[in-house]
Image (tube, rainbow, N blue to C red; front, side):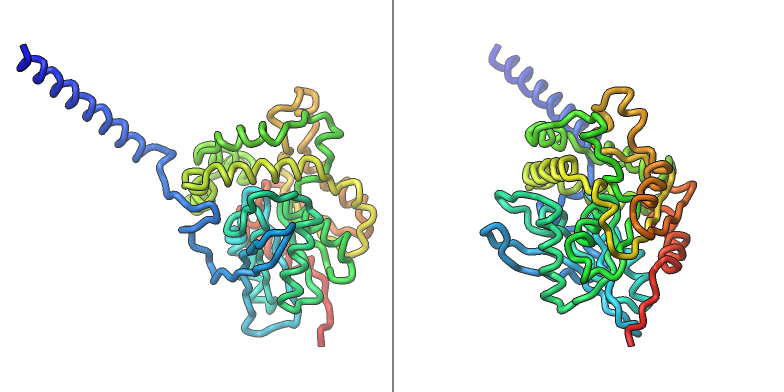
Length: 347
């Protein structure tokens, strides 16, 4: 009897091992298997050496990762590239190299709370705070005047910088910025930070990929886009998953509660809008009532309205491109960007 029990136990163990192995193989080959990165994107390589600006903010030491690309033949001007919510400094790779070749010094920071920068134990996020942080970085580099180019959420931050420091900003360039409308005022329900956090804990590579394919690339997909999916998903797979999700929640709350659209008329710097018209990004769109969902994220309309509100703004539209025109059609985007950058005699 005991021998039979032993044989049964061994059989159960063998079957369990077989089932476990099958699940493990399925996981390893499935869409969610991939690299794990640390909470400050440790393990993910950037296209240029990462430097660190260390300073104190809100009574705690923090570090701001950034790239500083120097041109071979300087034109005497500097450009600051500001990433979006689901982007990092590295995702500006093509544009930073292009501008460097045109003679610009290019500064590309990861904002506090994002990517390779500090995610503090406690932090009150605001676009004003991020603007002060970025100005402090530029002060440390002795850059007094610059063009600021912001994509997505970076467009909201770039706008805030132009409003706060107009004497420093030579030109404001917004690339498919979000915040061209006030979602709260439009009727998108508010979520608590705890609710945002719970949503962010559900982030997977598959969800990121599906969203980016539809919104960023107009239902097209290329192998080179996968790197950016894994960049984000790797942080949510890694040991700092909860930290990353928590700060992502805090940042979504900042974006939702701090619109810049109402101040477009106060901008006093030359402004260029580069907009892919197939974009339909709107924070909280998936939880909005049907009538609200139907009217928000209308970028053809929003882009034209923004250009009318911003004094002297120049608008360039890409009829067939989505939320990330600099990544979807870099050559076309860079031609339009270069044509739209104002000429300044720096001699």
